[in-house]
Image (cartoon, rainbow, N blue to C red; front, side, top):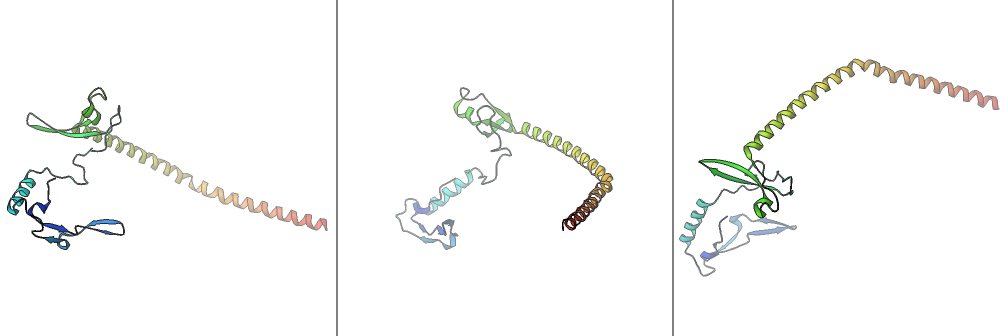
Length: 188
């Protein structure tokens, strides 16, 4: 990122940020207060603009909140537990992305043995795993359909059993009530 501080040209900008209810937010540029020639200019305005254009031309693209590499932040070293970092390698005119263990990169083999994996190899493994998951899903769906068919076949018997049991319970409750009434009358 390049420096956008315009105070070198003598410009003072106020009201760039605003706090409302504890939340800090940027103020749109047209609502900010610009004071020309507030400071003694260290750099001529034209020179500053030329440098800004040069910096923009040389700047690497900023990824923002989206990952530049597909697996960035997802891989962890199995030995030391540190994250893997993506690196773009150029060799004999071809480019490839590799993910390397941060511990190995910063501290060498004494801390963690060299771990690296190419993005193309990860792509192949992810594709293979996705295929296995797909076939597992198809097998589980077939098993679910089979179980559903069995349940539908047994459904009339399963649904009839609770009704029959309810009728038997009701008959037994009626008999108990009659016996209780007879006993109460006999005790009088």
